[in-house]
Image 1 (cartoon, rainbow, N blue to C red):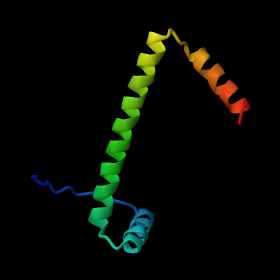
Image 2 (tube, rainbow, N blue to C red):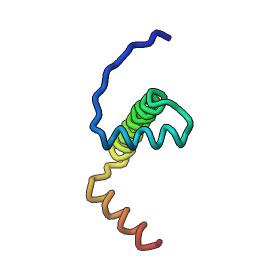
Image 3 (spheres, rainbow, N blue to C red):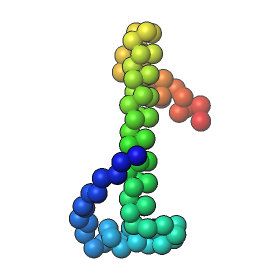
Image 4 (cartoon, rainbow, N blue to C red):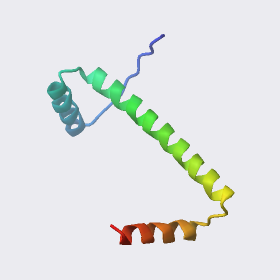
Length: 79
């Protein structure tokens, strides 16, 4: 896997938080930022897949947004 170097600028408060978390996890700043970006990308892709799935189900069943809100209300009342 080819690697590219990226230069980033963070304010002092964010750097302090990054350093605290990296030190606590016993990893470098670079590893923390790399892992964080990978997690963000994976989460975003997963959400896009979930939205696409929901849209497909809604179209197949002729659900409207209002139907979804009503189902959520019903579900919450049971909890």
